[in-house]
Length: 94
Image (cartoon, rainbow, N blue to C red; front, side, top):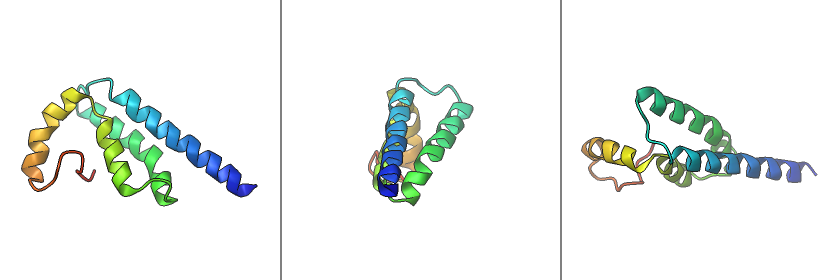
């Protein structure tokens, strides 16, 4: 019974993370405070999933970048490529 409860809870938290990423991707970030808030909330939702291995690091990184609006990609991409020239877009480790 405890397994079922844990599994249900992890699915709910995972779904909450996916919902947050989908919601966030609809709105461009206005400033550094928006970015910091997104990062903080994303970590709050993803850290337990990573710790208990309900989410892989690769999937977590992919979800993190999916939470950005396309306009944010345009803004961040040149900076990220400059800092990590050997990385593919979407593979940046947050």
